[in-house]
Length: 312
Ligand code: FES
Image (cartoon, rainbow, N blue to C red):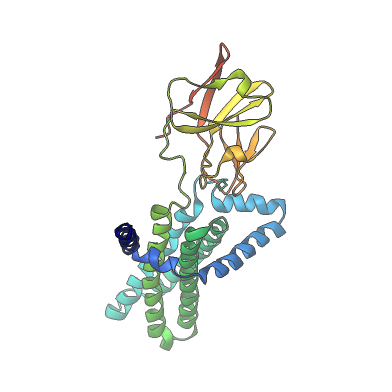
Protein backbone atom coordinates (compact mmCIF):
# COMPACT_ATOMS: atom_id res chain seq x y z
CA UNK A 1 0.00 0.00 0.00
CA UNK A 2 2.75 2.40 1.07
CA UNK A 3 4.73 1.47 -2.07
CA UNK A 4 1.68 2.26 -4.24
CA UNK A 5 1.26 5.63 -2.60
CA UNK A 6 4.89 6.46 -3.12
CA UNK A 7 4.62 5.40 -6.77
CA UNK A 8 1.55 7.59 -7.32
CA UNK A 9 3.30 10.52 -5.64
CA UNK A 10 6.30 10.01 -7.92
CA UNK A 11 4.06 9.89 -11.02
CA UNK A 12 2.26 13.09 -10.01
CA UNK A 13 5.60 14.75 -9.34
CA UNK A 14 6.93 13.62 -12.71
CA UNK A 15 3.83 14.82 -14.58
CA UNK A 16 4.24 18.21 -12.88
CA UNK A 17 7.84 18.56 -13.92
CA UNK A 18 7.00 17.44 -17.45
CA UNK A 19 4.43 20.17 -17.97
CA UNK A 20 5.71 23.07 -20.03
CA UNK A 21 7.34 25.77 -17.94
CA UNK A 22 4.99 28.38 -19.41
CA UNK A 23 1.88 26.38 -18.48
CA UNK A 24 3.25 25.63 -15.02
CA UNK A 25 4.03 29.29 -14.36
CA UNK A 26 0.64 30.49 -15.60
CA UNK A 27 -1.23 27.79 -13.66
CA UNK A 28 0.41 29.08 -10.46
CA UNK A 29 -0.82 32.67 -10.99
CA UNK A 30 -4.23 32.64 -9.31
CA UNK A 31 -4.28 36.46 -9.31
CA UNK A 32 -4.84 36.34 -13.08
CA UNK A 33 -8.42 35.11 -12.57
CA UNK A 34 -9.86 38.28 -11.02
CA UNK A 35 -8.02 40.37 -13.62
CA UNK A 36 -9.49 38.20 -16.37
CA UNK A 37 -12.95 38.47 -14.81
CA UNK A 38 -12.81 42.28 -14.82
CA UNK A 39 -11.70 42.38 -18.46
CA UNK A 40 -14.34 39.86 -19.55
CA UNK A 41 -17.10 41.79 -17.80
CA UNK A 42 -15.90 45.02 -19.43
CA UNK A 43 -15.88 43.44 -22.91
CA UNK A 44 -19.28 41.76 -22.40
CA UNK A 45 -20.77 44.97 -20.95
CA UNK A 46 -19.46 47.01 -23.88
CA UNK A 47 -21.13 44.81 -26.50
CA UNK A 48 -24.31 44.49 -24.47
CA UNK A 49 -24.58 48.26 -24.13
CA UNK A 50 -24.54 48.49 -27.93
CA UNK A 51 -27.66 46.28 -28.16
CA UNK A 52 -28.32 44.32 -31.35
CA UNK A 53 -25.74 46.29 -33.44
CA UNK A 54 -23.29 45.17 -30.71
CA UNK A 55 -24.02 41.54 -31.54
CA UNK A 56 -23.41 42.17 -35.24
CA UNK A 57 -20.15 44.02 -34.53
CA UNK A 58 -19.03 41.22 -32.20
CA UNK A 59 -19.67 38.67 -34.97
CA UNK A 60 -17.44 40.68 -37.31
CA UNK A 61 -14.74 40.98 -34.63
CA UNK A 62 -14.71 37.22 -34.01
CA UNK A 63 -14.58 36.62 -37.76
CA UNK A 64 -17.94 34.83 -37.83
CA UNK A 65 -19.25 37.38 -40.33
CA UNK A 66 -17.35 38.88 -43.29
CA UNK A 67 -14.17 36.78 -42.93
CA UNK A 68 -15.74 33.41 -42.03
CA UNK A 69 -12.57 32.53 -40.14
CA UNK A 70 -10.98 33.77 -36.87
CA UNK A 71 -10.06 37.42 -37.51
CA UNK A 72 -7.60 38.07 -34.68
CA UNK A 73 -4.76 35.79 -35.87
CA UNK A 74 -4.98 37.31 -39.36
CA UNK A 75 -4.67 40.86 -38.01
CA UNK A 76 -1.75 40.21 -35.67
CA UNK A 77 0.59 39.75 -38.65
CA UNK A 78 0.25 43.48 -39.43
CA UNK A 79 1.81 44.93 -36.23
CA UNK A 80 4.38 42.15 -35.85
CA UNK A 81 5.57 42.65 -39.44
CA UNK A 82 5.51 46.45 -39.30
CA UNK A 83 7.33 46.64 -35.97
CA UNK A 84 10.00 44.20 -37.16
CA UNK A 85 10.56 46.42 -40.20
CA UNK A 86 10.55 49.51 -37.97
CA UNK A 87 13.24 48.17 -35.62
CA UNK A 88 15.44 47.25 -38.60
CA UNK A 89 14.95 50.70 -40.16
CA UNK A 90 15.69 52.46 -36.83
CA UNK A 91 18.97 50.63 -36.29
CA UNK A 92 20.05 50.99 -39.91
CA UNK A 93 19.49 54.75 -39.55
CA UNK A 94 21.54 54.85 -36.34
CA UNK A 95 24.30 52.62 -37.71
CA UNK A 96 24.65 53.96 -41.24
CA UNK A 97 22.33 56.93 -41.74
CA UNK A 98 21.35 55.40 -45.08
CA UNK A 99 17.73 54.85 -44.09
CA UNK A 100 15.66 57.99 -43.37
CA UNK A 101 14.48 58.20 -39.74
CA UNK A 102 10.90 58.58 -40.91
CA UNK A 103 10.96 54.97 -42.17
CA UNK A 104 11.11 53.65 -38.60
CA UNK A 105 8.50 56.17 -37.45
CA UNK A 106 6.05 55.20 -40.20
CA UNK A 107 6.51 51.49 -39.56
CA UNK A 108 5.95 52.07 -35.84
CA UNK A 109 2.79 54.12 -36.47
CA UNK A 110 1.47 51.61 -39.06
CA UNK A 111 2.09 48.77 -36.61
CA UNK A 112 0.22 50.65 -33.90
CA UNK A 113 -2.82 51.13 -36.17
CA UNK A 114 -2.86 47.38 -36.89
CA UNK A 115 -2.28 46.59 -33.21
CA UNK A 116 -5.36 48.54 -32.13
CA UNK A 117 -7.54 46.44 -34.45
CA UNK A 118 -5.77 43.25 -33.37
CA UNK A 119 -6.33 44.19 -29.70
CA UNK A 120 -10.05 44.82 -30.26
CA UNK A 121 -10.52 41.43 -31.93
CA UNK A 122 -8.31 39.73 -29.34
CA UNK A 123 -10.26 41.10 -26.39
CA UNK A 124 -13.48 40.06 -28.16
CA UNK A 125 -12.23 36.46 -28.46
CA UNK A 126 -10.99 36.61 -24.87
CA UNK A 127 -14.55 37.19 -23.67
CA UNK A 128 -15.41 33.51 -24.17
CA UNK A 129 -12.30 31.89 -22.70
CA UNK A 130 -12.21 29.97 -19.42
CA UNK A 131 -9.92 28.14 -16.98
CA UNK A 132 -6.24 27.74 -17.91
CA UNK A 133 -7.00 29.01 -21.40
CA UNK A 134 -8.33 32.25 -19.89
CA UNK A 135 -5.26 32.74 -17.71
CA UNK A 136 -2.99 32.18 -20.70
CA UNK A 137 -5.09 34.56 -22.81
CA UNK A 138 -4.87 37.28 -20.17
CA UNK A 139 -1.05 36.95 -20.10
CA UNK A 140 -1.01 37.27 -23.91
CA UNK A 141 -3.45 40.21 -23.88
CA UNK A 142 -1.74 42.16 -21.11
CA UNK A 143 1.69 41.61 -22.69
CA UNK A 144 0.53 42.94 -26.05
CA UNK A 145 -1.34 45.84 -24.44
CA UNK A 146 1.88 46.76 -22.59
CA UNK A 147 3.71 46.71 -25.92
CA UNK A 148 1.17 49.10 -27.43
CA UNK A 149 1.69 51.50 -24.50
CA UNK A 150 5.51 51.37 -24.90
CA UNK A 151 5.27 51.96 -28.65
CA UNK A 152 2.89 54.92 -28.21
CA UNK A 153 5.40 56.46 -25.77
CA UNK A 154 8.21 55.81 -28.27
CA UNK A 155 6.25 57.47 -31.08
CA UNK A 156 5.45 60.53 -28.96
CA UNK A 157 9.15 60.86 -27.97
CA UNK A 158 10.24 60.67 -31.64
CA UNK A 159 7.75 63.35 -32.64
CA UNK A 160 8.61 65.61 -29.66
CA UNK A 161 12.33 66.14 -30.18
CA UNK A 162 15.19 64.73 -32.31
CA UNK A 163 17.23 64.42 -29.09
CA UNK A 164 14.75 61.85 -27.80
CA UNK A 165 15.10 59.60 -30.84
CA UNK A 166 17.87 57.30 -29.45
CA UNK A 167 15.99 56.42 -26.21
CA UNK A 168 12.76 56.14 -28.23
CA UNK A 169 14.43 53.62 -30.55
CA UNK A 170 15.72 51.65 -27.55
CA UNK A 171 12.17 51.67 -26.12
CA UNK A 172 10.54 50.37 -29.31
CA UNK A 173 13.29 47.74 -29.61
CA UNK A 174 12.54 46.52 -26.08
CA UNK A 175 8.83 46.52 -27.01
CA UNK A 176 9.63 44.38 -30.07
CA UNK A 177 11.44 41.84 -27.87
CA UNK A 178 8.38 41.69 -25.62
CA UNK A 179 6.23 41.15 -28.75
CA UNK A 180 8.22 38.01 -29.50
CA UNK A 181 7.29 36.65 -26.07
CA UNK A 182 3.63 37.77 -26.43
CA UNK A 183 3.38 36.16 -29.87
CA UNK A 184 4.80 32.92 -28.45
CA UNK A 185 2.11 32.90 -25.75
CA UNK A 186 -0.54 33.67 -28.40
CA UNK A 187 0.73 30.82 -30.56
CA UNK A 188 0.67 28.46 -27.58
CA UNK A 189 -2.91 29.53 -26.90
CA UNK A 190 -3.99 28.35 -30.34
CA UNK A 191 -1.65 25.46 -31.14
CA UNK A 192 -1.10 24.18 -27.59
CA UNK A 193 -4.44 24.82 -25.92
CA UNK A 194 -6.74 24.91 -28.95
CA UNK A 195 -8.36 28.33 -28.61
CA UNK A 196 -10.20 29.38 -31.79
CA UNK A 197 -9.49 26.12 -33.63
CA UNK A 198 -12.36 24.25 -35.27
CA UNK A 199 -13.33 21.63 -32.68
CA UNK A 200 -14.58 19.34 -35.45
CA UNK A 201 -11.33 19.47 -37.39
CA UNK A 202 -10.20 16.01 -36.31
CA UNK A 203 -13.54 14.23 -36.42
CA UNK A 204 -14.48 11.89 -39.18
CA UNK A 205 -17.76 10.20 -39.93
CA UNK A 206 -19.56 7.83 -42.28
CA UNK A 207 -19.55 8.53 -46.01
CA UNK A 208 -22.13 5.74 -46.39
CA UNK A 209 -25.46 5.57 -44.59
CA UNK A 210 -25.41 4.11 -41.06
CA UNK A 211 -28.41 3.43 -38.86
CA UNK A 212 -28.69 5.73 -35.84
CA UNK A 213 -32.20 4.92 -34.60
CA UNK A 214 -35.83 4.32 -35.49
CA UNK A 215 -38.52 6.72 -36.66
CA UNK A 216 -40.10 6.98 -33.19
CA UNK A 217 -36.79 7.97 -31.55
CA UNK A 218 -37.05 11.41 -33.12
CA UNK A 219 -40.27 13.22 -32.17
CA UNK A 220 -41.16 16.57 -33.72
CA UNK A 221 -39.25 19.59 -32.34
CA UNK A 222 -36.87 17.60 -30.08
CA UNK A 223 -33.09 17.35 -30.46
CA UNK A 224 -31.56 13.90 -30.01
CA UNK A 225 -27.85 13.07 -29.77
CA UNK A 226 -26.65 9.93 -31.54
CA UNK A 227 -23.31 8.57 -32.74
CA UNK A 228 -22.58 7.82 -36.37
CA UNK A 229 -19.35 5.80 -36.65
CA UNK A 230 -17.89 7.71 -33.71
CA UNK A 231 -19.07 11.14 -34.89
CA UNK A 232 -21.40 12.76 -32.30
CA UNK A 233 -24.49 13.93 -34.18
CA UNK A 234 -27.56 15.88 -33.14
CA UNK A 235 -30.78 15.23 -35.02
CA UNK A 236 -33.87 17.43 -35.12
CA UNK A 237 -37.25 16.66 -36.65
CA UNK A 238 -38.75 19.88 -37.91
CA UNK A 239 -42.07 20.04 -39.77
CA UNK A 240 -41.82 16.28 -40.23
CA UNK A 241 -38.36 16.33 -41.81
CA UNK A 242 -35.18 15.15 -40.09
CA UNK A 243 -32.02 17.32 -40.08
CA UNK A 244 -28.62 16.35 -38.66
CA UNK A 245 -25.45 18.27 -37.79
CA UNK A 246 -22.37 17.53 -35.67
CA UNK A 247 -23.21 17.63 -31.95
CA UNK A 248 -19.87 19.12 -30.85
CA UNK A 249 -19.84 22.92 -31.16
CA UNK A 250 -17.11 24.05 -33.55
CA UNK A 251 -16.19 26.94 -31.21
CA UNK A 252 -15.01 25.19 -28.05
CA UNK A 253 -16.65 21.78 -28.08
CA UNK A 254 -19.94 22.60 -26.32
CA UNK A 255 -22.73 19.96 -26.40
CA UNK A 256 -25.22 21.36 -28.92
CA UNK A 257 -27.92 18.80 -28.02
CA UNK A 258 -28.08 20.45 -24.56
CA UNK A 259 -28.70 23.85 -26.12
CA UNK A 260 -31.96 25.53 -27.10
CA UNK A 261 -33.60 25.08 -30.47
CA UNK A 262 -35.96 27.52 -32.14
CA UNK A 263 -37.07 27.79 -35.77
CA UNK A 264 -34.49 25.20 -36.82
CA UNK A 265 -31.62 27.09 -35.18
CA UNK A 266 -29.73 25.67 -32.19
CA UNK A 267 -28.04 27.93 -29.65
CA UNK A 268 -24.97 26.44 -27.96
CA UNK A 269 -25.34 26.23 -24.15
CA UNK A 270 -21.75 27.37 -23.54
CA UNK A 271 -21.26 30.68 -25.37
CA UNK A 272 -24.45 31.05 -27.43
CA UNK A 273 -23.13 30.44 -30.94
CA UNK A 274 -26.05 29.72 -33.28
CA UNK A 275 -26.17 27.10 -36.04
CA UNK A 276 -28.79 26.32 -38.65
CA UNK A 277 -29.92 22.68 -38.76
CA UNK A 278 -30.76 22.82 -42.45
CA UNK A 279 -27.18 23.36 -43.64
CA UNK A 280 -24.98 23.49 -40.51
CA UNK A 281 -24.10 27.16 -41.17
CA UNK A 282 -22.99 29.29 -38.24
CA UNK A 283 -25.39 32.24 -37.89
CA UNK A 284 -23.89 33.88 -34.81
CA UNK A 285 -20.51 33.75 -33.02
CA UNK A 286 -18.24 33.35 -31.24
CA UNK A 287 -17.97 30.24 -33.47
CA UNK A 288 -16.47 30.96 -36.86
CA UNK A 289 -16.74 27.49 -38.39
CA UNK A 290 -19.91 25.72 -39.59
CA UNK A 291 -21.05 22.44 -38.06
CA UNK A 292 -20.49 19.19 -39.99
CA UNK A 293 -23.62 18.55 -42.04
CA UNK A 294 -25.18 15.10 -42.41
CA UNK A 295 -27.75 13.77 -44.85
CA UNK A 296 -30.62 11.90 -43.18
CA UNK A 297 -32.97 9.34 -44.67
CA UNK A 298 -35.80 7.21 -43.26
CA UNK A 299 -36.03 3.72 -44.65
CA UNK A 300 -38.52 1.12 -43.47
CA UNK A 301 -38.76 2.77 -40.06
CA UNK A 302 -34.98 3.09 -39.65
CA UNK A 303 -33.21 6.45 -39.51
CA UNK A 304 -29.85 6.57 -41.30
CA UNK A 305 -27.28 9.31 -41.72
CA UNK A 306 -24.08 9.96 -43.65
CA UNK A 307 -21.77 12.93 -43.95
CA UNK A 308 -22.76 15.45 -46.62
CA UNK A 309 -19.06 16.05 -47.34
CA UNK A 310 -15.68 14.95 -46.01
CA UNK A 311 -14.48 16.77 -42.88
CA UNK A 312 -10.75 16.39 -43.54
S1 FES B 1 -18.67 26.04 -27.21
FE1 FES B 1 -18.56 28.19 -27.36
S2 FES B 1 -20.36 28.67 -28.42
FE2 FES B 1 -20.38 26.55 -28.37
